[in-house]
Image (cartoon, rainbow, N blue to C red; front, side, top):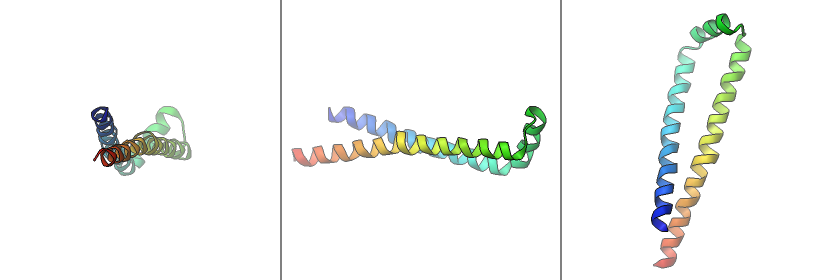
Length: 90
């Protein structure tokens, strides 16, 4: 039982780290190429910069919510559960 919890915890925490790194790279790429992508999106989809800014902000907010509340917090809760079980058995 404890080995299954450890495996699940490790998967969640590693998924969080990978997601945080990918999100950071996406954020840096968004900031670095904002003027290029804004003009390109305006030409293709007939949007203005305010709509693109709102869409980018919503994307990064959803990404943060997913990483923190769906991956990090369950991973930490499982980690604390494993530690308490090991203390109780010792």
